[in-house]
Image (cartoon, rainbow, N blue to C red; front, side, top):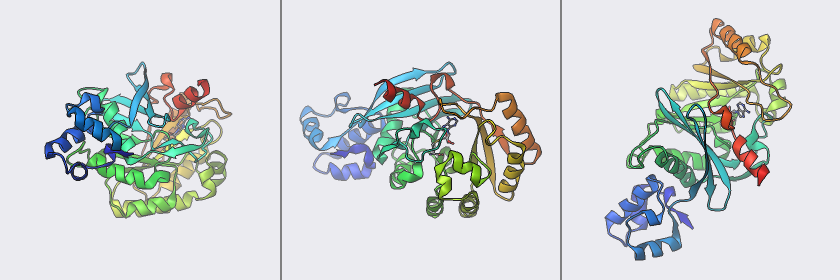
Length: 340
Ligand code: SAH
């Protein structure tokens, strides 16, 4: 079965060439507004015949949780009953949608709940576009764009679903669609070096984020299995090449884990690693997910960040939004699967 959200407006016009052109626009508008057939004004007969070939709305809201800080967490149900998460965050500068790129994840990071049961499947580009459409419609008028930024920091490894993510980038930035500026999109990867090189060549103006989380390969290997495939030096070299090609500052995510990556040596290592690279470090405290890893305290994190800033490293300590509603990557889905 084909899914309309996999296609651009002109592609839908081609698919519906047998109908008057304005019908294609109606279908395309319904995709962007997160509507299903019965919410459109398409003629009944047309709906009946389209239903046989095309899905209009490939996911629905299964559960919504609202955090004290206004953060909203969604569980979305896909056509095959799989569930993915999405988070809507209110911020001073606009609203950000944090979305998933895969059902589960196979990267195996020790601190991350998304990967507990491995990867079930990739999301298609259309499912990712519809995620945005459905969540957008739930946060204001469905005919408006109610968000300013999108971050691919939900469940899944975007560069492990490379083709769909790149196709989604074209859909979300499409002039006749949401028309989101590339500059307002961040993609976070655990550091798939080959893909970083490949992606550099496409010259998208997005912000590339890398989950670093350790300053030595030996330590990184204990929390992130991907470190067995690529060294930190290989990641830094790939990012240097990315900055050279795109001129865009890259971002490191650094999640503080007590006694693992919050030592003084990590500060000097971070200084050396980031030297000469146009980059910023986002430090967050671990959101413990029941494993053996413990979070660095907020106070210790503030001191860690201050030392980094004093060492000349561009760094900020991020607040963790939505922690009262299982805000971290994959936590709510993991809990829901456990209770099923
Ligand atoms: N696979 C991609 C994107 C998804 S994770 C990546 O690795 O970058 C988005 C961010 O949340 C990553 O930096 C990830 O390491 C972090 N994260 C995952 N679980 C976390 C937790 N329990 N506490 C704090 N940050 C977490």
